[in-house]
Image (cartoon, rainbow, N blue to C red; front, side, top):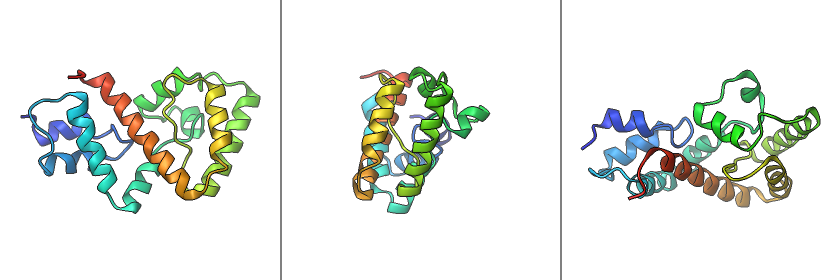
Amino acid sequence: MIRRDEFVSRFGGVFEHSPFIAERAYDDGFIGDELTVDKVHIPLVAVFRAASEEERLGVLRAHPDLAGRLAIAGELTEDSKKEQAGAGLDRLSAEEHARFTELNAAYVEKFGFPFIIAVKGLNKDDILAAFEKRIGNSRDEEVATAAAEVEKIALLRLTSMLPEK
């Protein structure tokens, strides 16, 4: 059985800057001997969904803006940096960057957390289209959509770390 400190060290960042999720999954006895994608993802998601509304919003707020100031300053987590680069967000034209900056500001103003999307398999045009569509959502719709995207990001991160079965 993996020790708690090892588990939290290894999986505490799967949900962006939110090690409490891994801590609770471990402490609640959800983690067994077998560390596979499903056997880690399912308990982490259960803890995320059971967290208070304020805690879930904290997880959403922990995500960086896409192509935002943290990316420019080189301060993204390694996972976020790879994910954004894979979608081409590190190679935006000045016009594209201005559009992302404008949308990021409007989105945060409206919803109180950054736009979150699992960027793997998407390109900058796909992301911009989703951004422009989702900014029209209600707050409840967008909280639910962002939470689902966070869970998808966690799954993608775990898939790169663990065997499937």
